[in-house]
Image (cartoon, rainbow, N blue to C red; front, top):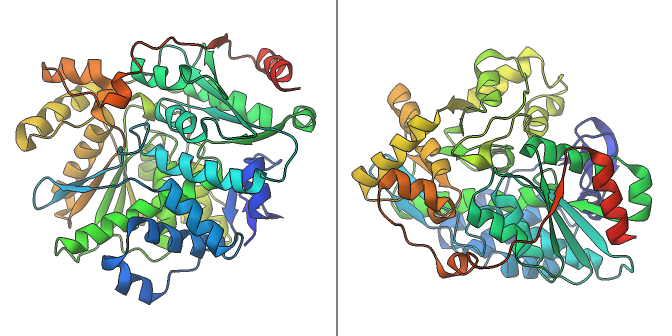
Length: 446
C-alpha cells in the first residue's frame, strides 16, 4: 500500500515514510492510494469478533501488506486493550463511550496504535525521533500517555495557554521523562500552525527527525475507524439492524474522517452528523458550499475550538480529488452533503444539554458529547431518522469545574486522573512566533 498527498496525487510514499514524515513536503495530507471494501464475510462474522480482532482486520484491509500480519496483530492487541461500550439512552439514541483508555479520551485509540506502529519501524534507527503535536485538549494527554517512556522517541506537546482544562493541562505537563510541553500564548490554530511550520522547515528536518501525532498523521486515523465497526456490532447485538446515524463532536475533523474511511470500507451508515460549537466552519460549508476558515474562538467545549480544521482536506479528497474533481467545486460539496449534515450550538445551549441529559437519562455527559446530543436530537426531529449513536469523546471529569457548575453537584473523578491534581506542572512558555520554537527544538535535540 502506498499513500499519496491530497495536494498531489502523483506523490506516493510507503507507510513508514507516511507515518514518520507526518506531513508531505507540499503541505498536503497523506491518504491511502485506495480503499477497498471489506469482504462480505467480515460483516457476517462481525457479531462474534472481539474489538481487537475487528481492529486487526480493518487495519489489514487499509494497509494492504505494508506491515506483516503477525506484527500488525500484536500492535493492535497491545494498543486496543480497553472497551468502547455502547450505552442505550432510549429507543432512538445511544452513546458510544470512547473514554475508557489511559487518558480518558477517544484519542487513546489513535495515540496508542501510532506509538506502537512507530516503535515497530523505529527499532533499527540510530537517531532519536521527535514527535511534535498540537493539542486543543485531549490529543496531548493521549499522546503523552501513549508514547510515555517509549525508547528512542521524544514528544513535544504545544497547547494554547489558558484554553485547556486544569486536568487536561496536568496530563500534558506532569509526566516528564520523554514528554515535554510548550505553553503557547495563542489558540490551538496557532499551535497547529507552529507544528506545520516545523514540518515544512527542511533545514530543521535535516537536523532533527520529526514526526506528528496529530490527526494530520494517517496513523492516527486508521485506529479511529475501528470503533465505528465496534459500535455497529454492538447495535446488531441489541437487535437493531438498520444502518445507524453517527453523530461526531468535531474540531479538527479527524474523528469524522475516520468514520468516512469506515464507510468506504463498507460500514453501513445512514448519515454522519458533524456537531460543532461556535467554530462552525464546516457546518457553514455544508449549508452553503463556501469554505471560509477563520480564527477560532474559545468555548466550553474547548477540544473543538478549531477555526481551520486540517482534516477538511481529507474530507474534500474523499469527495473531490478521488473522483477527479476540484475539492472545492460544487459537485464535491453536493456529494459530501448527501452523507454529512452539520450543526453548531452555543455554550448556553451546550450547558442546557448537559443538564437535560442528566435529568432525562441520569447520564453525565461532557460538554463535547452534549453538543453531539443536541445535533443528533435536531437531526432526528427534522428527519424522523433511524437509531443514532453519539460519540462521547472524553470523560466528563476532564471538564470537572464546568460540569459541576452546570449540574450543581460533584462528579466522580477516576483515580488515574485525580492523582494528577497535585503534580507539579512543567511547561515552557512560547509566543506564536516560530523562530523561538525552532531555536528551542534545536537546543533540545541537536
